[in-house]
Figure 1: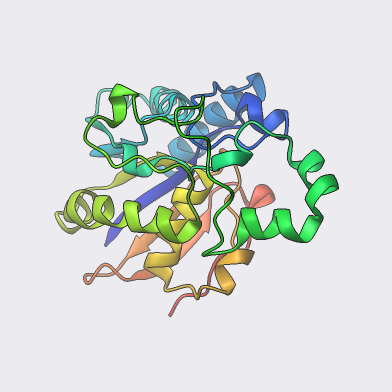
Figure 2: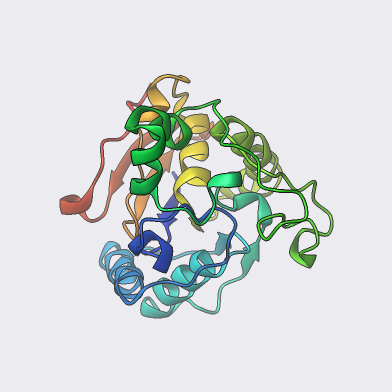
Length: 237
């Protein structure tokens, strides 16, 4: 049996303020710190022993991983940070309030920007505050100015196939601490979710999702450890 946990970071300060965050390196809110602690308690209650963890290069995912692993006294395991696990880039929406954007553009348009598979928001201004091409974290990357879930999946997949999947195949139990959309991209891939159905898949903050794979690395079981905060999961095939 192969097992891994997907963990969306705890509530960030911009989650609290209902703002599009994307690649901006926003800290956890106090509630987010508490969610990460609770995630660690749930992992401990499950008796999970991790060989390795993966995070994005954004502080809210790293901090969530660190807090959860500290709770289960596994902060010593190797942690790989990869920009390809970042949240999707929200382009020209970055930093804006979601409710205010809905008032201006309509609920349907904002939902398409947020939830659809292949609709990208307007790009960020080149050379502006949300153009991350000069950030040294991304020195070896082709940095986007906006992303859809489709293009997010296109950058997540090489990380999954070349780094994460081999660890799973070797029998390692993994913790992947990342973001709502990078985790939705992983779920779309492993559960073979259609382009239309992925709009209905959401990942709650700070709630570990335990996934069990068969010998061919196909999912055979999946459940959130905090049942009271669970969201519907794609069906197993």
